[in-house]
Image (tube, rainbow, N blue to C red; front, side, top):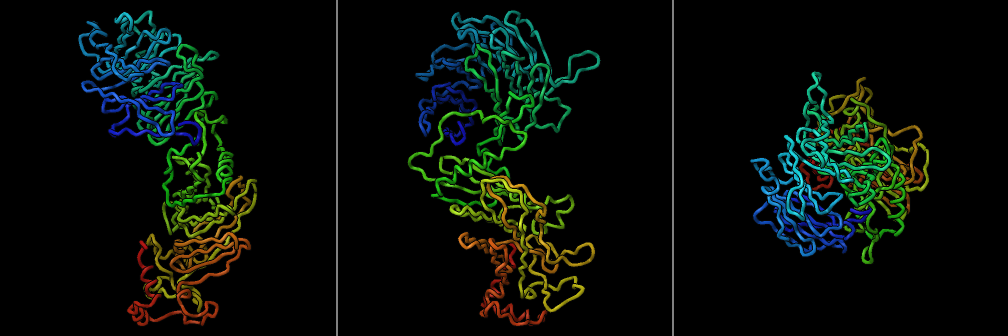
Length: 629
C-alpha cells in the first residue's frame, strides 16, 4: 500500500500462508516467507510485481527472517533452532549456518526451541541477537563464529526489540511480562514489569497476564521512549477486546480494537537503527481492517483510512456501475469526500505516501456505487486495479432515529435493517442521485459544493391494490366508519406481518413506515436530500417494498412501483403526478375515467375469477402471492 490509490498485489502460486514480509528498504523489492518453507524475492518497481527468485527449504521449517537495512545478507531462523544466511543478490544459501547447539553450547542441556527472533546490533552489523522460544537469548559474533553472551529467562520469549544505542534490549514473554537486559550484565534482566498485572498485597510479583505477542521499543530525542505492544492483558477481563498498549514515560494507554490484531509496525523518522528512532505513527493490521494511530498527539487519535479495506463494513445490498463518466466527476467526489472528516480523527495527512497516483494512458473513468444494509451509499473510483473510495453518503440521516421499542411498530416491512438500500439511480451528467429503501421510500438527492441548512421536503403516496379479496381473507378488524372508498387490506408484506392495530384500537392508515426529520437539517457539501417520497399504510397493511425505480433528470421526474401499482412524481414541483393501482394499469380503460365500483365483491365471484388464469390481472396477482418474487 502506498498513498491512497497506489497499491500492488502479489500472489504465491503455492497458495501457502504468508509468514513474514521484509522490504529491501528504498530498493523497490520485497522478501516474503511462506508456510511451505519457501522464500521469495519480488520486484515492486513495475506496475505488476514480478517474482525474481524463490528458495525452498526442504529439511527445515522457517520460523523467522531478518534483513538488516542496506545489507545483502538475509538471516533465516528455523524450527530446529538453526540460523541460515541467504545472499539477497544471488538468492542462494551462503553456507554459513549458526547451529543451535553451537549457539547455546553446553549452558543448557535441552533444545532451546525454534528461533523466534533475529536482529543485528544497532552498533555493529557483524553481531546478531538470536532469541529462542524457551527464553534463551544469544548474542552471536558473525566474524569470530562464537557467542559473545548468553541470557536466560524462565518464561517463553515472543519478541525482542533493541534500544537504538545497542547497549540494551527488551523481550516480551508468555506471562505478560517485559524484561529489559543490559549487554554488560546478562545474568539477569535489570528491569522486569508486567504492565497489566495486578500488584499483589503480600509484595509478591504481580500476577501473570496473557502473552505479549510483540513489543517495539522506540526512542525519542526530546521525550521518554515509547514501548508499544500487543497482547498482555490480564486474564480476569475475559470479555476485553484485542488491544494495543502504548507506554510513554509513566502514561499507559490501551487502544481497544474491533478485530483481532494480526501484526503492527511503528513508523519512525529514520531507517537507521542506531539513531534516535522518533516514532510518529503505528500501523496496526487487524483481521478485517488496517488502522494507523497518530503518536504525535497525546490522545493517540487514529487517521481516517483512505483505503477500501473492508467493502462489506455494512453488507452490500445493491451495486451500480458507470463507465466513461465526465472527467471532473472523480476529483469532485473525492474533494467533497475528503472534507467529511469525522470528529476524533487525527488532523494530520495519512502518513503512508509512497508512489504516484495516475490513471494511466489506457484507462477511462469508471465509478462503482454500492448501497448497504445500514443505509449508507459509497462511491468508488474503479479506474485503477483496486477500488478507491471517493465519497460516502448516509441515507438514514433524513429520518428520525428510532427509539428503542419503537422498531416493531414502525418498520413492519423489515425488522433488522429499516434503511437498507434496495435500488439506486444516478445520472453522472446532471448528478441527480436517487435511492429506494427497504421501508418503501425513495429519496432524491442533488449535488452541491456548498453546505446548506434546510428542511427536507417530503411527499406521501398511497398505492393500493383494487382486487385483493381474490386472495386476501376478510380483515379481522372492520373500520369504525366503513365507506364506499375503503378497500380491503393489500397483500401480506414480505416479512409476513399480519394486520397491525394501534393501541387505541384504530387501524393504521395513511402513515409512512419511518418519520422524516421536520426540523432544519445541516447538510455538508456533496449529496443533499431534496425530496423524500414515502408509501403509506393502507387499512392496517404496511406498504409493499418498491420493486422498480426510474428517473428522468431532464424532466425532473421519478417513477417507482411495487406489486400494488405505480407512482410518478415531479421532484422539481414536488407533486405526485400519477398514482395507479395494478388493476388500472392492466385495464383497457383510460385510468382517469374511473367507473364507480361496489366496495365489496362476493366470495363466489372471487373463486370464479381465479380460474381465468389467462387474464393478466390474475397472473399479476398470482405473481404477487409469492414472497420471493
